[in-house]
Image (cartoon, rainbow, N blue to C red; front, side):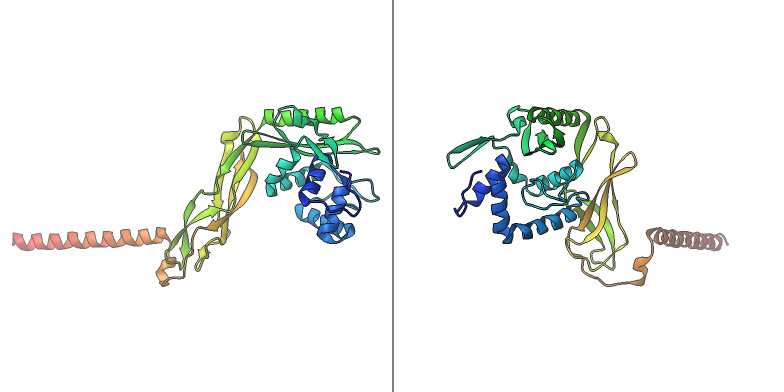
Length: 306
């Protein structure tokens, strides 16, 4: 973005310089500001990469220019993009900017898909002489977002064409469904030794899943408890999970939380007796009472006849 050595630059300008024109100088400036040096920042980058599950990536600098033993894959970049969008959706406002001017120098965003009115609102471009043109593109239509990663193209136009083909394929063949809403209630589930002895459960997050178009009705949602819920229980405590499946395949699991506090109440030994056993005892008592009543009635009738 053509910043000058020693000058003071607003952080928001550096962010625009990175998001819009992939400014290497802006990357280094922010890395040094955050961590004190680019080397320390890169260490933090690699630590974060492991936490995100990037198994085939290693970073040696903050900007992505060629460096020995620095590498990544399209799949890792897709994982990174998904987490980035989920954790920082507001950043797409920066990535969708079509041009950026600094020091009187106007530069265009090299993601030409932003100008095609197909729902693209990010994300990053890259180009290296040794590996070609790369594009990480994302688009949203209605409630569905797609991410496409293309690497190694020989022209800027080809990377855009291939990324658009992937995005269109995704929108045409897959459907994203909200199987679980954050405000959904599950249960109530029994709470052993609790007062009250039941509690509703709520999902920790929304449950969006993607399936092949036409398979939306195959989605099933079930709650599972790892073990019986025993008081005391704190509001927000993880007590189980929601399992979202399609045709027997698990698509996603979401933690289930207690919707309220459940203190420990008066504990009676028979509170652990199963409902089925209680019903059996009740039926036995009623039967015994009916038999006894019937015998008394017969005895009374005999005395009356005499």
